[in-house]
Image (cartoon, rainbow, N blue to C red):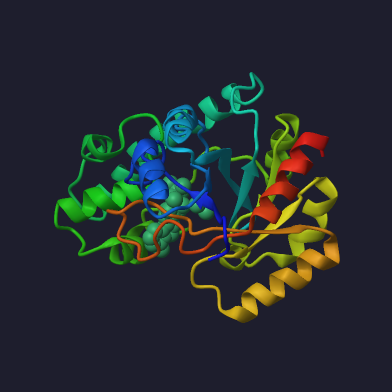
Length: 277
Ligand code: AMP
Ligand code: FE
Ligand code: FE
Ligand code: ZN
């Protein structure tokens, strides 16, 4: 780890993570992680609580978000850093996405029921609450009810993109997400690009105002990182990174702070934000 590292990809209970914002800050403090970005899926509702606890424990919480976007046949996730999370321009869009995320749970459950899997929407909401439910909450309900043995089986058999119980929800296009992030003074980065496998989108997104590529990410072979560092250089983008931490009980091996970027990179992102990119 660098001297004062930062983990720039973290989820809390406000989306599909299993640690509360306060618990994440406390863990960061314990492992001496000075900075992290809270990047919940399509919501900023955990940021105030994280920053409040962060101020007490001297952990900097960068206000962030991860937008779920879609292009034909693939999901593309766009991270926003240093966003003005209280901006009135943000709230209506996020409310629209989250309202449709709730409606979608009923549709996923209907598909599961037709496949002979007897769970109810309330089984899912009991785990997620009704604000920002997602597929991992459905997976946890399936595990709890004994229909699958774990996350992998839940996604492989039912929930993966275009799987038998997959249902989409209202999403921004990558261009819309980048535009909105810029409107609220944020800095946009292309999350886990190897998962989407749409490198051809990078030049267009850079033209729309994308400022970074997430080149450091769990499971990336060094060739992936090298590949994205090279592409970032080619298009004049910064290289961001983080663990995509989803909490102690998320069933993922990667823990907070296992992948970090330097202070220098954080300062570059901050400068882009201050400059109004
Ligand atoms: P959603 O935003 O509701 O469509 O759910 C997407 C989230 O599901 C991602 O952000 C991950 O947290 C999780 N996810 C997606 N694919 C998998 C997988 N194969 N195994 C476990 N979790 C996954
Ligand atoms: Fe997630
Ligand atoms: Fe993601
Ligand atoms: Zn994520």
